[in-house]
Length: 629
Image (cartoon, rainbow, N blue to C red):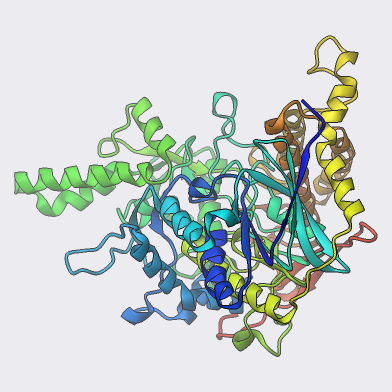
């Protein structure tokens, strides 16, 4: 591997980092306003935009659509749903800001060519109260095309992994990274940066091992870059203790939403008992949250885990019952019955083919016909996201009309506490349940806000050339370290002077799984186990300086793991600080097993000091703006 890497400098006004739904939304909206004012917008993506992000493989439903013009729901309804699902911990202003604009994004999707299901009455087909059914295999392709057209091909840089932020006296000044295809080091200089690099997978040991290693619910290429970038920039972070553990079809992580909401299926344990009924009593202890409809996702998980831990597993989705019940109305008319059954079977398979193809392959490989027998479901390993039923991310300003006069507002919507650094999608915290449509909408909000910031701070920040050169050396150090030491052993895979990224990842996942409540620990931990985790993470951070790579792909793996460990550390610090179990089903603190509304009805925020390297963890108040406490 040659050590001479070309330095490529790109100067722009707004730099969007990421290529998923939030980044695409930012690209479309920012480009519209930028062109009116002669502002340049540039996007850099680790992957290729057409299949980048959580929607890259497709989707079978749009999970946030309010239907304001139909008059059935209100923004306040959605705020209440989101807040109760997160056991009271969510930002009213951020959730409402997205909810009031999300319908227009969905209408844009349809305009761009996304097939949204419509019934015989011409209205959208709902999967549930907030969800719309779509033919979404090419969902991301359609959205990415719109974003690329808005930006112009010359302003899109793909297959470039951004590793570090650049700052100038506390203001963001750009970012650096490297091409994963060419020997090029990229330096992006910008007046504002919008972080939208996704959430984090791979911090905890996955359920899928061996031949299935790498199979996960969330995209395996989302490795904590949003968290790393915003923390390293000095931004205040929030809800890093909130992890998401979805219940999914076992082994291939297929979605369960359509089965519960559209097909009206039920789930049972191995003895045919509906655990959501037999464990209904556990909901009562959580008051208004436990009695909310729908039941919060973590409490539904809790009910599942009670049966699994009692030895009543496996747990099954009763697909055969659901299909039979839906076709019942046609009994007696054999032709109509067969037609309905065929339609239902096709929809059952399409749910997976639209978004989790591997689940359809697993069904086929194991001779599963959903109309004849049930399929096993269960909890996955934990993930860190700000867009689904998780809330981890950067602490960002709300919009002026909703947030002014409160601690939630400091000048520009979706700007972090670092001037000029904006966050959207999985990169922004405390506004869960935005999903794909909401993430794109938040990207639009942040993109427009970033353009406003640039117009009012229209000077190019200074970038220290010496620092840039040092970051280049640091990025490519794994190559040099390998070359220096590879000859010291007869087998290059066994060497006391370095560690390969896969070995590093296994060590991190083992620590988090065993001591911070992963699958093998039944999602449980206590202060003693957290202290042990921090001790071992400290050793692992020391060893991160010894990571090596043999090619560009392996170099990417090195930096993915450097990013992951910051997500891991921030999580351990946050769960150690919150002395309660607010989200049973996502995690259990065995030393503080109950929810404590009096002391912990708040946000847990944190910050890493760029000057000292010290962490601070502290509380932020939850402000009730819509009568939803």
